[in-house]
Image (cartoon, rainbow, N blue to C red; front, side, top):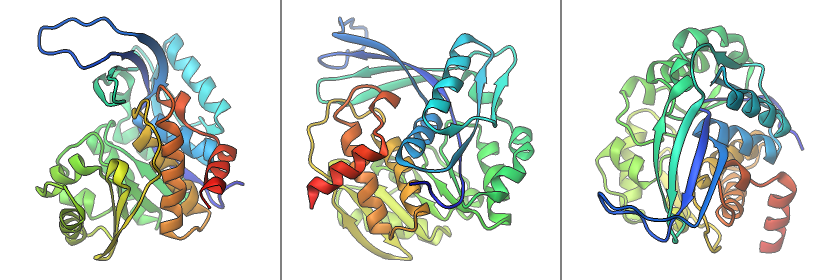
Length: 309
């Protein structure tokens, strides 16, 4: 099933170098890993792939380096049903890189070299004005230059395009940008960075959501890991529980959630049903290793949900 109306994702592309360890090393400590792999990632690309595989009609605005990795990434994105016409090649630049440790609990720590992602300038965004203006929704994260995220949000607002921001990695954001966002999807850490409220339970999630509503954001979805999502629409909140699975690797859980969420929203599902669909996609992803290799296809999500009834 294809969504009616195009989704545009604006964001980052990385080559992920992933090492599995029993535990994270202490300062100055060297540990021997159990499994090493290189896989394609980056929050923007992960979310684009999640949307493409789950059935969205999706175009991706991003930059890769003029290297072999960049060419391979573009080819793989096409296999994942992503329109790469707006994935630019940045001359003289390397494709972005992420160095990732994953521990036995499936938790991860990540270091990033932006590379070509830093070349996604406001000028490149402006060159995609028509593509953004013709879409029904725009999905962004914070691994791209902040001024470019703001430029895209301004275009989307001018043309009445639904603007969704996954404010990751955690970063303070200007009120001007927040006021242009229709749906924001922080995790607990990102919500605390934006609001100063430590999100520990439903009450504190509601408190953080209220602050984001005051900044002009109508819909706040705070992801709570295994506890699900705190959904707040114009101040009315409830927690939508997730699905219990044994996590192997949580690298792409949030990205899978966001990409699948937009697919469901553009299929005109109710917001609770869209969240449930996104929960299912993320639940499948955490049972697999890697970022994009873990992202499920639509048939898998539908089959998972069918078993929950």
